[in-house]
Image 1: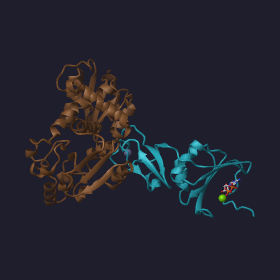
Image 2 (image 1 turned 180 degrees about the horizontal axis):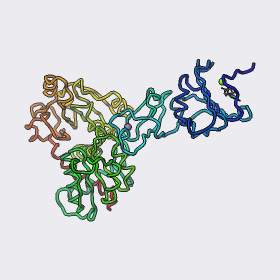
Image 3 (image 1 turned 90 degrees about the horizontal axis):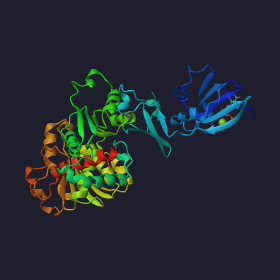
Length: 154
Length: 305
Ligand SMILES: Nc1ncnc2c1ncn2[C@@H]1O[C@H](COP(=O)(O)OP(=O)(O)O)[C@@H](O)[C@H]1O
Ligand SMILES: [Mg+2]
Ligand SMILES: [Zn+2]
């Protein structure tokens, strides 16, 4: 059976597959590549998926994203798969792995935290996993974010 | 042995590191009482207090001076550069070029951690908003060690267990020694579930009681805290609650002989004046212990032998 590609095939680049439905734009936001690159980037949302019901997919043409660039999307898309495409074929495939620390990506939920002031300091969180859920502990005030992480993106 | 540069949160400390501080405090106690020392001679401690404090600031100053060191102060924020809009980060950079260590009290949670990242001299957190105040916890532990015993302690924490950061960080530290903790508080000021859960995970035997009478006969330590009026929207509710969590000499008749009463001070009326003369009262002793404990902390971070 010929597989259906929702967007046109890419010759070389990166396909981020199995993103939780509705999170494609947040993935792009976290990657921070829009405006930083002239690569063609496309996002598809609510694609039917056997494993996930529906999923989102992001494709970046002409650029192979390195694991350290991509791993931070595990915050909001823990089951994402990174596919490196060369000459129209998937040549490498790996799952995203949660980084142990993230910096400058999420706003601390504590309004009285020093990271939410005009001090020259970026937010920083220690990441841990409890079962299926991801938990962020602010390095500064120790407040924990464990739900709706996408809503706390800076 | 003791390699920490900064004193920010009790969570950073292992039991061995806490024990090292308490041991050092014991060695320095005679100097806290006035015996001459030049242990920290030539050292300057900068006290940066963005919020008011009496005991904490005075005991740091006393500790420094009794060890032969000196202090420089930034107390009033009205005349200081902070009121001119300077960031804490810039103030820390500047002061860390003047002094040998910084004691910081600030209204924002996490301020001391940030200061420690910027400063090239040791930073000691003396209260960051609703966050941490580790030298208070250390002096509580020292009081328990000197006046009772740290291991397998039976302690009752009484009063505001919801907002009181002192009791949270004391309970956490005691979990390193194995403890039985009874929580006695009004319904509105109960210890948050996640803190109780965390303590149980760490092996603490946590139980809750609503009446003081239920915990007094078995306790080694009664740790009293202040119930603040501001926590109650209805003043008559406050009156009722405040009256219930109040100890008097009369109430102590069932207590064990060696039971001690602690309080971080200032007290309002949760401990009757008639308790002061009983064999149980230790809160003024506890306040004194702030001096040797802060001596210990400063001599360790400043690397004095
Ligand atoms: N040349 C290509 N251009 C664009 N997308 C591709 C290309 N090759 C594969 N993909 C997409 O990359 C993802 C992984 O592909 P593949 O490894 O073939 O499938 P699966 O992981 O489902 O077994 C799928 O979403 C697929 O549609
Ligand atoms: Mg597939
Ligand atoms: Zn924070």
